[in-house]
Picture (spheres, rainbow, N blue to C red):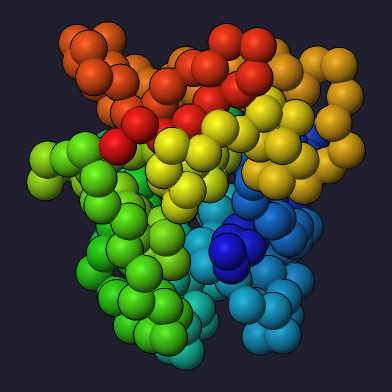
Length: 234
C-alpha cells in the first residue's frame, strides 16, 4: 500500500517531534519543516498527502504557506496554533485550512483528525486512488477499499487507524486463513518480531473488533484461534 506522507511545519522542535512520534506509530511517513519557507520547499519536491501547519512561523507564516499551497496543490491542511480565540479559528478556516486545533493539544486527538481528513479527502477525490486497483473486499457486512483505505460496515464508514486498517486488509484478503501474531506484526509493522509484538497486535485487534461492533455481534468477523493466531471469519 502507498505510504501516506504528512508534512509537519512548526518552529517549536519539541512539538514537531511529538507529532511525528504519534503519527509514525500509526504508520504515517513524516517530513518536518522549521519555518514556512522550508515547508514550501519540501512540498515542491516531495509528494505530501496532508500538512499540519503552525501559523506563527519564521520567514513565511502559516496563512501565506496555505495560500501558496492552494495555488498549486490540493491536499488537506490542519492548522495547529497557539492562537486560540474563536476569531482566530474562523480566520484560519477562511484562509484555507480544513481543520484547526489549538495548543496545548492532545496528540491522539490530532491523529484522529488527521485520519478523518485523509479519509474524507480520498472519498471526495477518488481519482487520488490508484485507478489500476479495482479490488474490493466484501464479506460479513463489511466492504473494504484497500487503495482508498476506507472501510464500511453495513454502509456506514468505519474510522480506523492505519495499523488497524492494514491488519483488517491482511486478514480479509485471505478469509479463514489463520495468521500468527508474529506474521501479522512483521507484515503490518514491517519490523522484526520481538517479545512485546504479541501484545501490540492483541491491542490493535481488540480496538479493531470494537470498531466493527463485535461486542454486540456473536458472529465475530475476526476469529481467535487459540495458540495460533487470528483469522477473518467473513
